[in-house]
Amino acid sequence: SALNAGKEYDDTALVYFSKLADAKITGPKAANDAGYEIPYQWLTLHYKDAGDEAKMLKYAALGKELFPKEDYFDFVLMDYYREKKNYPSLFKKYDDLLASHPDSIRYHFNYANEIFGYLYNSDEGVVVNDKENLLKTLKGELDKAIAIDPNDVNTNWLYSQYYYNLGIGNRDEGLKIKSTKPEDVKKKADLIAQSKTNFNAAIPYGEKAIAQLESAGKKSDKSKYKSVDNLMQNIYQSLEQKDKLKIYQDKYDSADAKFVN
Image (cartoon, rainbow, N blue to C red; front, side, top):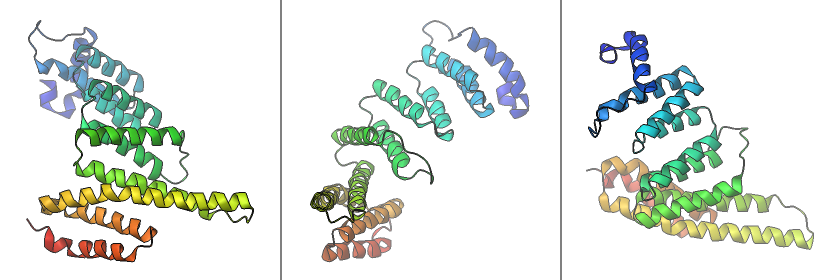
């Protein structure tokens, strides 16, 4: 009743939800009533918003213990760790979640996307830890997602971005080498060659995403389509293939007319 009455009754809700949760109440035996999850969910979110990590973890753990198939508690904790930029704990929650849902393309993709954002879109000055292992995990999650659905647009798009960013990293590292020592000249050439290998590896995934979006032709996908087109332009710009670059420039320019339904 306090919950339904609104925010001004949160203190009352806190008292009685705490009594239920602390007693590990799950409802009548075999009743399978999802309503009994509410105290644990409410308390977990309440203490997250209040910044009380100890109690948030307590009620999330209780909720997960008593309702092991409910992912709500994982999601609240993931939001909390994300807000706190506690990436090791965030990634650990993804590991836990995927142990229970190994066939979820959504969770595999989200995990890969989360790592990608940490590696490449972090705020300036953020020190990225354990980059090589995170890149391996990122690729592994993309592999698993692709295996579940080879035609998934988001997974193909992210896989293309993954290889493109690897290529940019190789190229930039190579261009930093100014020494004319034979070993440094070779290292530079190897890095530039590897960058082209990665750029080329990105292409099939981008092409697959483009093809799937064109086939669906949904107006709601226009922005995504333009983003993948832009990625393909960047890839071919990096490979200095002007003819292929022009193809995707034209696709980009015609997107408004193509995605109208």
